[in-house]
Image 1 (cartoon, rainbow, N blue to C red):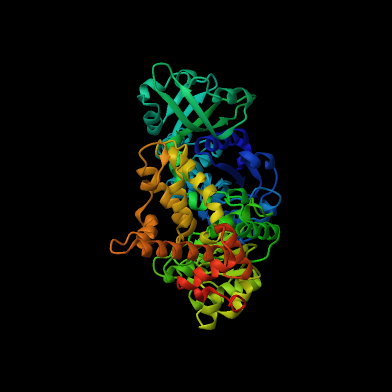
Image 2: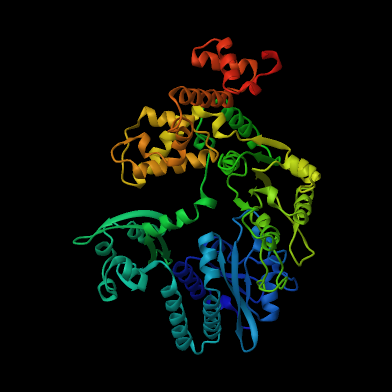
Length: 605
C-alpha cells in the first residue's frame, strides 16, 4: 500500500499551512497509525504511534481507518473511545474532526483538525459541514499526491474550499509572504481596515498596520495569540484590534504568516455578554469592613482551600454568587471552570438535561451526538447551583447521587461518568422550613450544608453603605461620562436610614438612578429614587398630622431603625442609648410611649 511517509515533507508543509490558516491544530497519520505530519505539539510526535498502534481498537483513528468514515468528537475528555494516551501530560483536546484518506478504495491514513482552546473549538463546531467538506477534499488531494495523479485539480479544489472557509470566519484575515506583503485578505479584513481588496493585496503590512509586531513573527517564527494592538495609519483613523499571528513554516524560516484580527469593541461586547459566567471575583471585590460581613469573609476564605460542599444562604441581592466565585478563585481549582446554574430560571423540563447532559436521541429535538451536562463541563472546577430551593424533588435525588458518588448519568444513558467537581449551592429561601414541609429532602440538605455560610442583609451592616456608595459612583460615573466629587450629607443619611429590602443589588440600582438624575457633580437628596425617599414621606409628610404627631412618627422610625441595626438585647439597647446620647431609662420610656414596648426583653421590664 502506498504510504504518506513517501511525501512527508509536502504533507508537513500542508499541515502547517492549514493550521496557520484555520487557527486549529492539524495531525495526519498513515494506515499504521504512525504520525506523518502535524502542527503544534503533534510536530514533536512525527514518527511515533498514535493510539499505541492498536489498529484493532475502538479508538478514534483506528475506527476511521477500518470504517472509512469521518467523525466529529465534541468532548474528547469524556469520550472513553478517544485515545487516552493523547491526554496524558498534555493540554487536553476539546474537540476534533477527522476524515479518512482514501485511495483506490483503501484507507491510507487519517487527517484530523484538533481544538485545544475554546476559540478553536468554536471554529470547528460552528462550521462542521464546511470543515468536513474541506477535509474530504484535502484527503482526496493527499491521495492524489501519493499516487502522483490529478494533483492540480485537487489543489484547486483545496484552495477553493480553504478560501470559502476563510471568508466565513468572523475575523479579519490577512496572509502575508516572507517579505511582509499581503497575498490574501477576506471580506471582514476589508471592512475592518476600511479599504478595498485591491488596495490591501500587494501592500506591505507596515503600510496597513504601522509597527505591527506580526512582521517580527516572520523573523522569530514564534506565534502570538489575542494581543491588544493600536495602529495609527497615515491619513486614517486610529484602529484598535485584538490580533493573533501564526507563522507558515518554511525550510529555515517562516514562508509567511496568517494575521487574524477583530475590533476591540466586538471583543468588549463579547466579554460583556459573557460576564455572568466569565467574570472573576476575589474576596477583595466584596466591599465592607463591618463585623457582620467580615466574619463571613473570614469563614469563606478558610473553607476556600478545601473541597467540601458549601451552602450559601441570604436574601436576594446580598451577593451570594460573588462569594461563590471568590471561594473558587481562592481555591486550588481556580484554573478550572466555574459553571453557574440558576435552578429557578431554567424550566423544570430542561433542568435535568442541562445539569446531567443527555445521550443522542434521548428525546425529541436532542442532538444526535448527545450533549455533556453542566456537571461534566465543571469537572476539575466548581459548579454553583443558585436557587437550589427551586429544584424539583425528583432531581434532588439525582443531585444527592452526584454528591455521594461523584458521578453522573446522562438522560437516556446508563453509563456512569465520573466528575471531579466542587459544589457550592445557594438559596434565598428557608430550606429548613422547606425540609419540614416536605419540599426539600433532608438527606440532600445535610449533604449540601457541610459548610453553611449566611450572607447578612444590607440593613444589618449599614456601616458598609458609604464604601458601597463610593464604589458604585466610581463604576457608574464613567459609564455615563459624569464625575462625582461627593454625595451630600442629607442624601447619605437617607441611604443609611432606608432598609434596603433588595440589599446591595437595590443599592446599586438606586445609585445608577441617582447618577442619571444628578445635575451637577454632587449626588443630592433630590436625585435619589422616590422609593428610597418614601420612607420619610410615609412617616413625616402627613399633611393632616400635627407637629407633635410628626415628631412622634419620626422618633418611632429612628428607634425602629436602630433596633433593627443593633438588636433588642441589653447590650444592643445600651449601644442605642450611647449613639443617641440619652439614658437607658429615657430609651425604655420612649419605646413604651411609641408602641415599641414589644421590643423590650423580660430583663428590661
